[in-house]
Image (cartoon, rainbow, N blue to C red; front, side, top):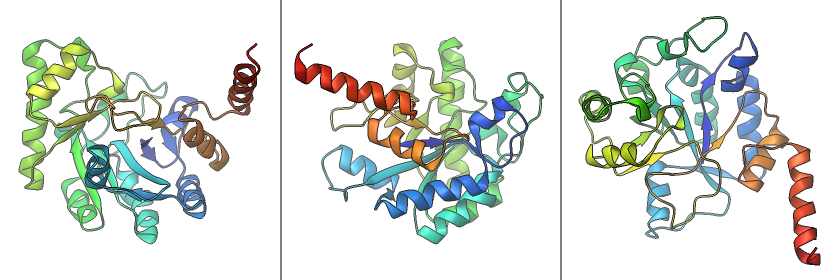
Length: 254
């Protein structure tokens, strides 16, 4: 499962980690297509996870956290060209507004526009699915029981009112979770939730801790390939060398 955030231009090093330039995103997708990989739908992913469906080799799930307007402006045309689906996790009380939660984190203090209802409706026609990223993007591990319910149940209700269909899945803001958050997520009616923990998803993965690879704006297409191959957020050559060195050491029994 691949995780992107904003697609657009970045103004500093902090932004460049979570923002991929439009031309670089297009390179990523076309690189994967040339390798014979293909994005699958969220429905097919969970059907595969539950052993109800097989998927072609090279299938992956494409996700975007936060719901930035740049996904509509820059990513959607590329995905339409490839006929690939994707999933966006929305911050329900900030639809049509800006990413207010990053204002104190971004050294420049800059915020960026998020998808509005009309963009979401348009994107649904071309294979995008939308699920929850809470109401205001808090660190869920810091909230009390009532606050957790407000963020989790409230976001589901907001989005179901907007979409006219059941919202089944959550992506934890910042990837922060604990047992209390997982239990609250299940109690709020979600069927599964996505973390930011890297790795491969196998049939026995905890459905409330689905793994995802964090794709950075600075990642080249080759780094993306290595991240996918190793199931790691580290796509550097150094990590690759470590991996093969460890395999040699294991085989030699050193």
